[in-house]
Length: 165
Image (cartoon, rainbow, N blue to C red; front, side, top):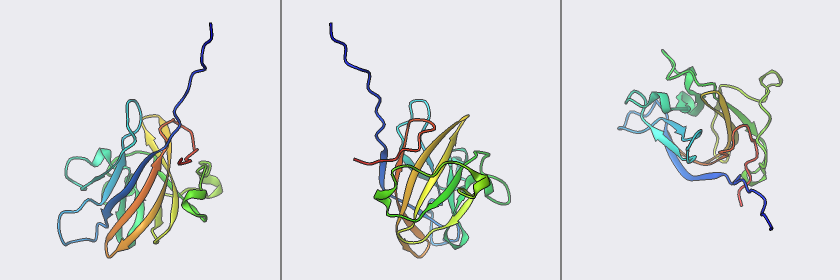
């Protein structure tokens, strides 16, 4: 008999246009945070959330003042949650990021926050319980307090590979 080898799907999950607003936006009810559906049975979707509306535990990052992408535990006056989420900068085109930078805070690769710039490309480390997931994110557009992102998240834990077919 012939057995075919087991296959593991390492395809990233793409969110082509996630839109969030800075916490400075006072024009209406807009989401300032976003989180990822990762972990056991997660489908990788990036979802936008309004801060203080009952979903703070689901928020991984939010847009702080001055368009700063910020980890949820940095929210003031009190952390939204205590997930250990991090962000790093990539100085290359989005499609060129095949592997997100290794998670080494000591070397300065990652930080709690980074200022968003149009066409900026960043890597994310996302904590879910005791596991880490990685994603790449690109700022598609900034319009006042509104930011549109393209995001690709890897659902295999601890795998920094974020190649999009």
